[in-house]
Length: 330
Image (cartoon, rainbow, N blue to C red):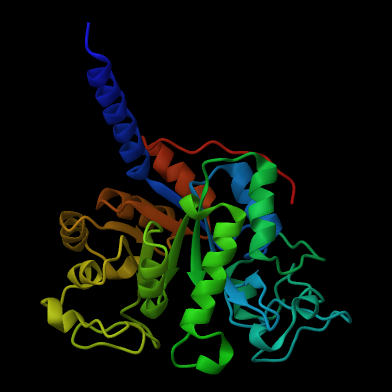
């Protein structure tokens, strides 16, 4: 019969192995709650994702003038989404949350896309939910508690633009407010913090080192956040040029846990390189079945998608275990 000490060690190893297996599972993330299906970053969207079954609720946050953490992709009211009491959509560019109190934010309806917008053309099948309000992060946590889902994680993006410092709190104040709320709500062991603004990730690593940090990158289009030959305003002084032009090496040097690139920027070789450095790779934002399948085939660790239902379907076809749904009403 093995000694008590040997039994304890064996049991500990078993638990660690299970934890590692859980940590290394494929990650299906509902982008803004799954915005192709329901109004983005709202309680109806998150309830739909929870009911469907996802590993992670991906969302974005800002901070109001009175210090409340609200869930929104934009740093202020979105002219394509926010309607006032008269039913009129707000004028562009939309007031920053930093200039609004929570009670003012709650006056706007974000349950229907502006019909004549490019956004409406992008997501013609989104189910409108008139009367929907911008939620606080507290309200999203409360919804998850209500669902009884003790497993789903949160990938929370800090919406700070270093080129527009007047539109949000500074990095230190923003991170302190966010981390304080997460700790008070008791979700510190179920969150990841992501950002294109790596300054916020550096602060998270200093103040809450057990919370994984997710380094977002975009290399193409009209507003890339990273260049391979220099530091940019987004990268907190880190330059791929100092790391052989390698994004995975740069993020490893910055002490990141996860690299989250635009899916069009990744290759199988880059994913292999990232894995060799101990980084997970979770790509955004992948909505077509053929692209979802290709990303799984080249070895990504997770997919952020506006269509988590399609990710579930393709992942299931490839033999990936799917998270159970926990039906809940918003």
